[in-house]
Image (cartoon, rainbow, N blue to C red; front, side):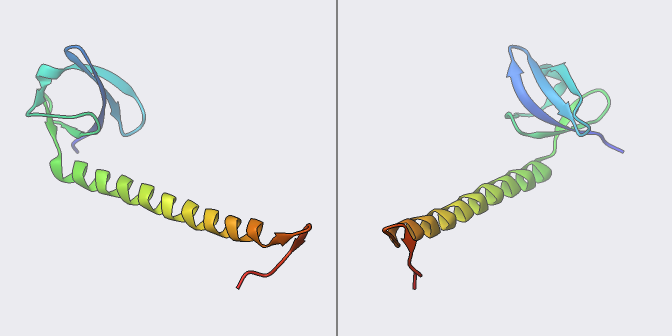
Length: 97
């Protein structure tokens, strides 16, 4: 089974990568095949690491969707709170329609 890693950051000629179980490693960027960015998913092919473009894109889309949903949820809560504050008259809550 090919082990997956994520590129956490680049430090000079090394990449700090995180294994699926959370273990961190430092590898030479020369061991990474192709152009890469922080956040890319790598597959350990033995003598080198290869970028899994499909899995990287899937992961980035999932993160973007999560962020979008989070902001929509907080936006809805903020609107609800503004309505409640606006409808508070002399310490009494009025029902918002």
